[in-house]
Length: 161
Image (cartoon, rainbow, N blue to C red; front, side, top):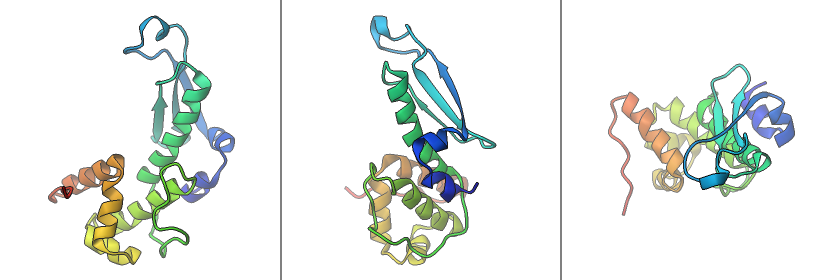
């Protein structure tokens, strides 16, 4: 199953393609923290893509958080050749179901252009400023772009103040 098919799956179907580990999380939380195996780690089958959630005392709520995080990790880590710009709004909100496929599309273009933002913007048919602002709006995306640029001995992107 390819990345876009995985991102299109409903949560319960996506979970069927994952190994789900539960455990007791460490850290702050007082007397309730280590009383049950409420932390959840999801690992996508046949990949090293994982997501973890341990904030809640409820395993059910942690699983739901981990699924959302897994979608973003799939988008950030599984690449394919960039396609033409997606239909619909340029930047769906982070809670929108289309956010992970949108991020995947951005990172396909960035990877295809060696993480040169201006070249990726041309490929996506948007301005360099718009792409940079979109990346800067999500600290996870911004950090990943700069990690990839560092691997290529490129200067990190700097946020405008």
